[in-house]
Length: 62
Image (cartoon, rainbow, N blue to C red):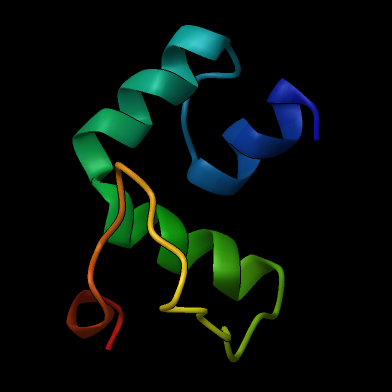
C-alpha cells in the first residue's frame, strides 16, 4: 500500500511521520479495527501454539 492510501484510511497527514503519529495516538485496537473493517475481514484464526516475544494472549483477542 502507498503512504497516500494508508493516510486516507486513517484520515491523517499523508507522510510516514503522520501515519506513525496516528498509529501511536490511536492505539493497536483502533488501528486493527479500522484496517480489518476496510479489508472486510470478519474472522481471524489464531494459532495459540506459537509463541513470540511480543504477543497478546488469547483473552486479549476476544
